[in-house]
Length: 196
Ligand code: SF4
Image 1 (tube, rainbow, N blue to C red):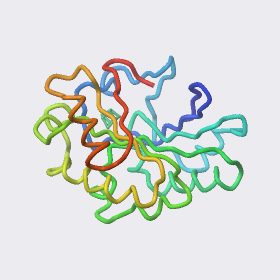
Image 2 (cartoon, rainbow, N blue to C red; image 1 turned 180 degrees about the horizontal axis):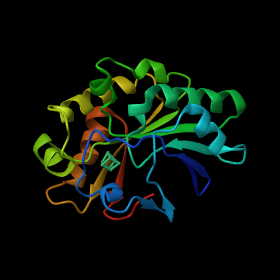
Image 3 (cartoon, rainbow, N blue to C red; image 1 turned 60 degrees about the horizontal axis):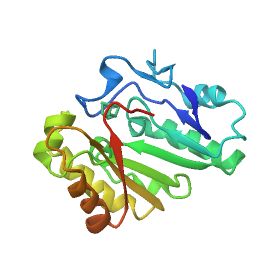
């Protein structure tokens, strides 16, 4: 539920995913840095806060996975509020960017003051490549993710898009241009089979 990587405390919040990324170890061996991240159930905010223990020594709290953290939006916001109440840690979300589509409304204003940074899996330079590798459960997910990026920039100060280098058809430079030129946000290239 809570695991340490470097100076960050990572929070594993959700069993579920909106995507079924064919490159993701979640479906075969959900392990990161020797942590077994297979959740038996979706934890409550109280369970997560208890699992975090004394987090005062960490620089950053990261809602990550495996699993999509924003599927557990209320719990995520409760835990983030607790972090902001008790400490000064930066709060970051690693997300697929599909929260507005899942929740059927713009949830990004709720991040204001609670979420300092968000990494969004752009994953591809176009919808066809995205669908091939990410296998979204919902139609038009790629467009919904792009719309989410536009909106979340208004409330979250630090936005980064990511894509995985090494997947067939994924053009990392084109992804970088979408991030930097189209949206004016940061870009991070991830490496296939290098998690955490
Ligand atoms: S959204 Fe994240 S956790 Fe879910 S399948 Fe894709 S890469 Fe894995």
